Image (cartoon, rainbow, N blue to C red; front, side, top):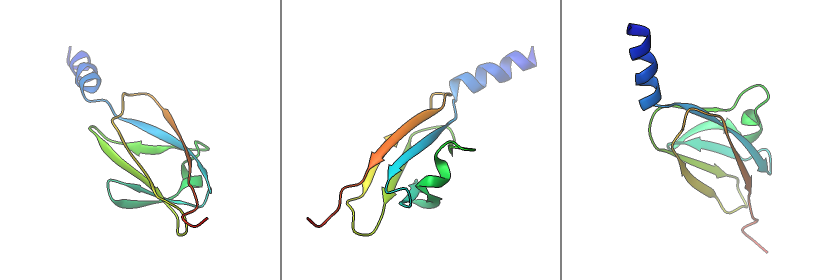
Length: 90
């Protein structure tokens, strides 16, 4: 019975991860304002960006490019985020 309660609690509070595909690949990834590494670190081989319960702010930045920002709430499954940063100067 306690195992069933654990599974139900996990279903109500889903975690997950996000794989990132970025151009340029060496852009910095921030999760909730904290630098996590380069975008290429989270391409899914071998891992994605791990997310805990709740809504998260994901930002991808690189000098000379406009930053990309989004919010994501995990659903318990792996998601894929494709980001193409645009140069800030023409």
